[in-house]
Image 1 (cartoon, chains in turn yellow, red):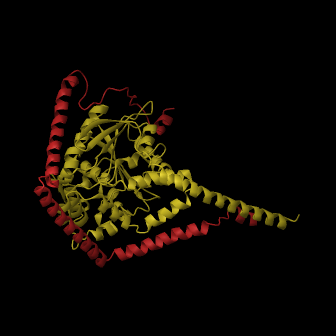
Image 2 (cartoon, rainbow over the protein chains, first blue to last red; image 1 turned 90 degrees about the vertical axis):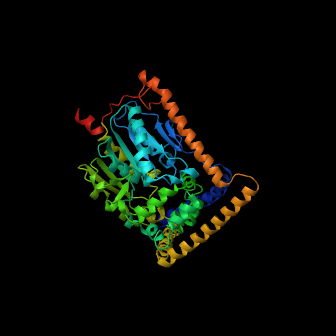
Image 3 (tube, rainbow over the protein chains, first blue to last red; image 1 turned 45 degrees about the horizontal axis):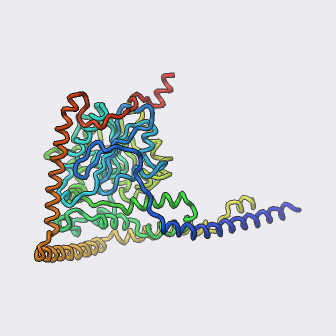
Length: 363
Length: 131
């Protein structure tokens, strides 16, 4: 047989095998699609932990150490006020909490909980001058250590920054800000939609109290208007792939599980941060004290996502330039706002960077 | 070369690429449209309408519940506030009760005593350097 005939035959068999594989996938899609529709959503946030303090809806978790020896400095994770904390602890193998525990960190997390109607009066001052210091005091007592590292994600990073700027004499030692907006002029569409000429934040808060999660998720989804449709098509295309479906369900459950934004805090965030950009301009006053983030001197790592549509690079990129920390660095990683911290890509890109940076500064 | 081409042949690959490109293009198109003043004004009008409906409904339902001698949302919220205050008082009472235990050695805020690993771990670089 000539070589041309042999390669033609190989090509035929390759096409045949691909077609066969596609038919098998189509069958699997139908079978697994039915299973998908009839099975219950996955349970998330299962890494073993103890509630060491609770106050209203706030819960302070201490995750049970996995490693036989841990770094001296405890690590506190702070989440945004608009999302549930379990994005940082999705499932075994997809949990940054589990990863940090395995690397030998002593991990704590503040879960703000679901704001109650009466929590609509909470302001940023309550979070950074009361709740966070209270929790940190308890972590130091629990761990017996004099200092702490904080990892803040999204608005959790803003809270951590505010805390750092208002507690310059410690006990904060290291600060990691993940996709944290600093310059709100760079917030793109979010800023346009909250334009003070049209957006009546007072009316919203005065009428509704806490801002309903549906309003927040709708605005996040509008940033990528066709995203949901395309995601559904991709889900159907990958219905045969158990790993893809499992991952999709975890993220989808989290994305659909948004929580209300405490009203007064929303008013403050809109007026003082989004409209006036006071954090960036160093004009923000909380509890009668000026918040000047340029005075922050703790070791700082800022991490941004290349394709972040919620906190664009423009909004996050100035942090390292502003703070006075002698030890500061920034990383821009591939990925989006959520895939930066959770999921298979995060485990390859962000998590090893966190371990490398934090381990050097945690003894 | 033909083999190489065939071994990576995927009948649906071009459709998947098209889907990704289309997603980017449509998102970009809608984002441009939604970045205009007209859109912000329209969205504000919609929010205004929603808030007006919400306010009217809240008022009407409030009157309705009052007439039926049932608690309104405001009443439930004020009950919630009172419960929150009771919770806070309970937390502080718990803390006061825990103080005698701390006098016996347990630190403030300490959780139930558990076996904790030693806090002596060193980063990889230091471990390698000390070898």
